[in-house]
Image (cartoon, rainbow, N blue to C red; front, side, top):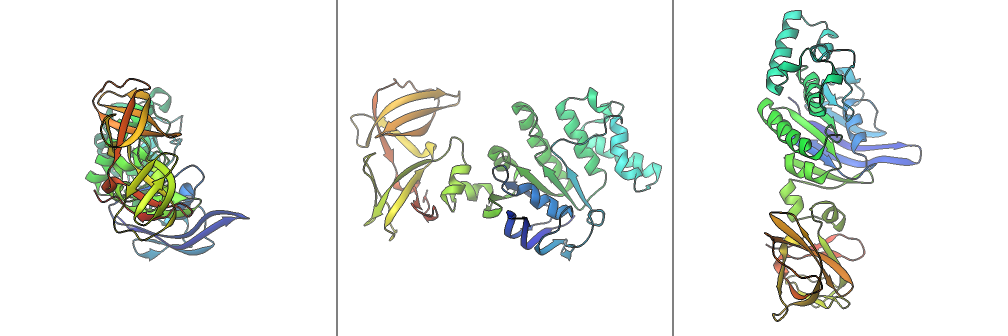
Length: 356
């Protein structure tokens, strides 16, 4: 297998910047996710790795070897596209065999690889079927199988399960993680679904407008986002943000009547306090805390999302179980300073992480 590296990469199309100042190394046998909103440069990264486009500046390396000018066929990378791109007139067996027969591989070796991959992906009963007779999940497995039979240096996947329904996406995430772990392949996975990225990645890169905003494990990025942009993208329900000012060790938001003391911070000026829904405590109205009212309740089975108004702002609180809250009732909220992040109110950069 192989490591993948982009160094000093820039790519523009006319006046449109596709990616800029990209320095990224994906380790051998790593499940790496590229995550961000649509049109942020994710697919361009895959195209640069594949050799479908050339960078304006910078180098591409595979396994430590510079391949910036090498054509796609010499890079030994396998691609799984969002639309799966199966040949509709070919059976599953023929689709799996195609990349091998094109390379003039011996028939016995072709059959051996097909049978091995079919067993790994649990698609042996599908080998005689055409794509039109397969379910969405089955077609997805066949597309992965067609890449796997080649035994490439790395897999590149561009939102391959985006078209599947929610339950099937959950199943396929588990299968992809299992497959990557068992086969010890380097896998680069592009998605705009933060739940997908968080659940499968060993590490992930957060993109914005063609630039990398943060790289880390899902846990690192969730617990220590380095900017408001990253904090807004990661987490469901999303993090709560309250704009105000910071001075003399205290954050103050006058409209919401929120005052939180945060130790060890010397900054001053416009600031944004951020806290995740699961880190807010709801108290009875006769207890100390921030005055608030219950606006809406969203029961979700194992936990409940409670929308609460403080001042003119609605914040989301996640509580376990199915508590009984009366709409419009008064409550108090407690923001533990150890659970609060503080961002610069102008740049959005992190000032202080939560310390829990």
